[in-house]
Image 1 (cartoon, rainbow, N blue to C red):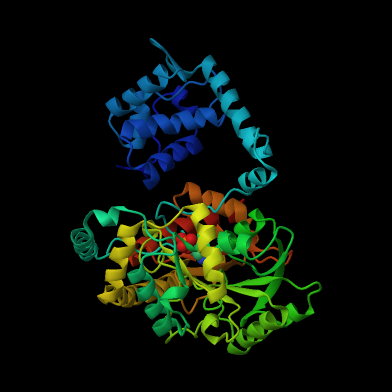
Image 2: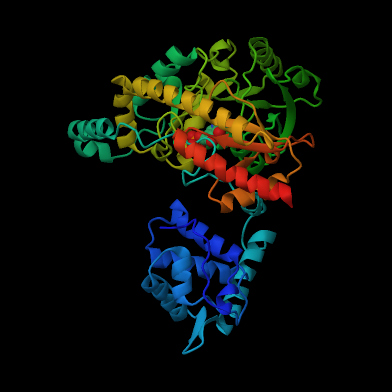
Length: 511
Ligand SMILES: Cc1ncc(COP(=O)(O)O)c(C=O)c1O
């Protein structure tokens, strides 16, 4: 399909369907998130969205079906079916001999939708608690669901060893039979807790035992548990500035007071923990690969944080979300393994090392927290599904996890280098890449006076996802730019996307 072909409008009427509107129809139908819909349904929904957004006024003529079909590179029948559906829903009128028009009824539909949206925007939804309204207004954690370039934090899944996974899952079902259909213990299945403890002890220098591992659905769940089980609303927590937005939102939702601590190239400026008055009950950190800067927390700072937590009887919340992917030797040992005072909660996830659809994360806890955290998780979701837990345990025991991570480490290291090269070749007028020593995403700093949010939105319309860096800061000291994920796309895909991004930035720069 010729999405990139220039618009071909046959009559004056068709000119009324502006280039921007045609582009937005193309972007909607080309979006992989809508891939499950038939082509005519995608066209129908895209035009309907334009009407609901007020981009097509009442009475506005739509392009003739033949003209739109030509512009989109689809058959006329496809557009006809889309128009018939819009007509059946009342969004358009069809007048014999003069074409299709946005209907008067659409005005009422638009108003309805507008009121609903406004209510969402101002939080005026009845019957929500103050906390519920605040969470709703905060907007949740915006995950990039479709693997579009450069959505940060997404792994490559197209080469996942599915056959091995499937074989191991069959073994689990054969051996456990219908027992695998029952509840898991809330702390997690024993074989998985053992495999996780072995993994973090060997690879991350942790001090874990299976009894201290709590299996969860995600690090996000771990963050919510930490925020509510370890702290009360109104308590202070030190956070990195800039910080991982998922953590910030979990802490805000629990009513904590987030106190931003600035960073330098060695990670959090730990001396400021001692200076802050009043002190905090916890500190949140991503020490092996700071999100989003990529800095590694220096060893003396790790020791200083452990000392601070011990003296304050505070908690260290260590989010070790992607340390499997370190490209220059082994990453530094985790803080948990260095902490003799049992003040550290270690959080890990398989979202990046395996695949996001697995929904398995975990905590390695100080012994005294295992009971309270396990009870609290039963209130959130009871337990994690047994079949994926048992399959994952086998995947780890059998050496498949280690082999997969080794393969992906080489793949991602190459993609990181490719993206760094592409940025310096094609985007050097706009961006400066800070090439990270690990992980799946690269912070790129805007060196031109282009508004970050406008660039993010224009890129999204062009099929590219960027996370704006300045949105991740809690203090006024913001650096504008983008966090660009490189792991989920092959070098040729990265190249095409960089070309599109260059077009987007050039267009914004020329205005
Ligand atoms: C710092 C950090 N922690 C945790 C996660 C998410 O992990 P999970 O899917 O287990 O919540 C992400 C995802 O981007 C992340 O960047």
